[in-house]
Image (cartoon, rainbow, N blue to C red; front, side, top):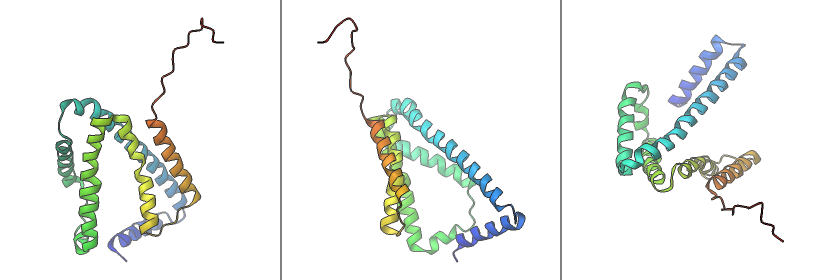
Length: 186
């Protein structure tokens, strides 16, 4: 059993010891908080697109510099609020360490934020925000191709809805001529 599986198992057993018959109630409360967290997170991310377009783009700061400032501020903040228990376990497995460093750090954060600011500057906040709907689809495909996760009908329908939403958001409205009610067309 890995460190994280043991930590989760211990936490779950502690909850069951405190609430042996109330596990269902506790999980419903957790779901409610999860919905609140996702909603607040979505509000913050959505606001960040508009903020970046309205206040940062006019400053003409290069997107690599904006990414450096953002990640530097996050580093300082996280130094104070991160739980460092078990952090040394990441370095003990080379595969996990490189995946964390390259996959999450360099590509998933660094390159992603550079592209984020670039897209906002060049294409606008609405187009950039529509790009945030694509990662769940990519994660679904990666899970299927590399981790042998199953893709069900609901997953396929959700993917279709995501692509339809992105298409509708980015579809340019066709210009319609102003109709004059006094002109009759035969």
